[in-house]
Amino acid sequence: HIEKDFLFFTGDVFNADWDGLLNGVTAVVSTIGGFGNNEQMEKINGEANLVAVNAATDAGNINYGLNNSNSQAPTCMDR
Image (tube, rainbow, N blue to C red; front, side):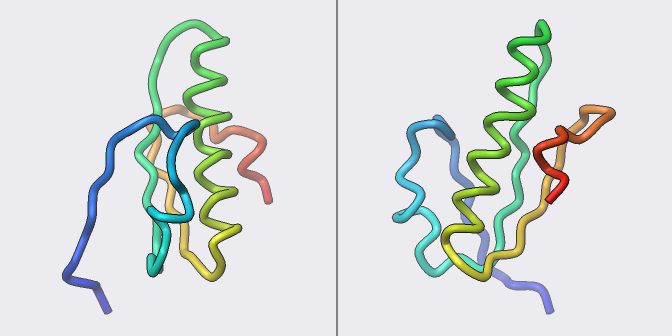
């Protein structure tokens, strides 16, 4: 079953109103990612996605999908 309604948000993952954004949400698909030096990639591809995963987990029974072009998923996603 595929839902017909999708909401797309852009913004700062580190300063988002996660409670407001995830209220009533049943699934989150993250397209957070980027390129740069190692520090930038760790923050964008790792820390930012972990913030989003934790927010979705804290919100309850939410399905989470990660779409990222990085060849290796961050180790923080191994849970």
